[in-house]
Image 1 (cartoon, rainbow, N blue to C red):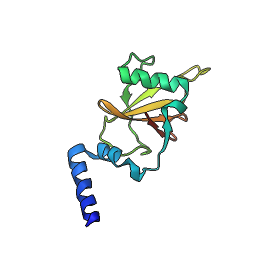
Image 2 (tube, one colour):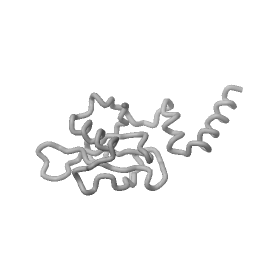
Image 3 (cartoon, helix red, strand yellow):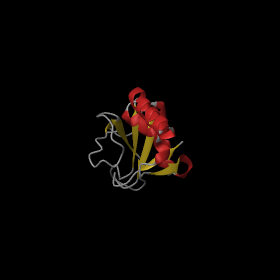
Image 4 (cartoon, rainbow, N blue to C red):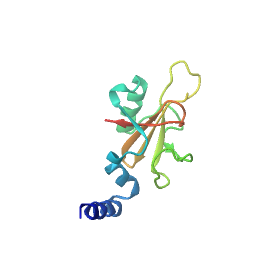
Length: 125
């Protein structure tokens, strides 16, 4: 009986919230992505996250473009769901390898990558 209720609740969440939001709601099941608290992010990543929350302005021209998730390292979502933002890397002459990827509009989920999308950690605010 409990399993049937859970299945029904899951289907309801999928129908009401959409696939990506339902995954966020059911994140306790785990999706293979580690978490990182905001306090453990590098200072530059915390600054980028603050800019995202206030809607810019962003220091790099490509900040805010659609992140394609071609490698599928983040949960599946509709095209345009994810946006990418540069996290400044001290000493780097270009954008460097660090990024924050946000999901949703307005953003409701954030991921940090310090190795140019090879791995992600979900930011816990």
